[in-house]
Image (cartoon, rainbow, N blue to C red):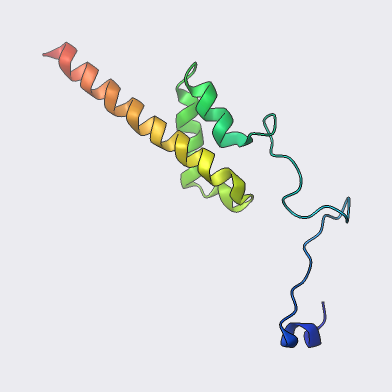
Length: 96
């Protein structure tokens, strides 16, 4: 894109170097197409440390690579928070 188009306010097309017909977000998300965050949320019900892994990715701004990941990573962070609170309350009740 040259400077004349930038001055006129024209936008540059975002394309894929491997396939110029695809846009930036036309590729499917990893983990069976649902993204790392949602996959971690679902897998977290079997293995709760996956929620904490997704929380680390969320606070590490992993979603800047692909904004479609943000909702799933945030949901996993909320699930990790709820799990932590539940474990703390259970531990407190069992100790007393």
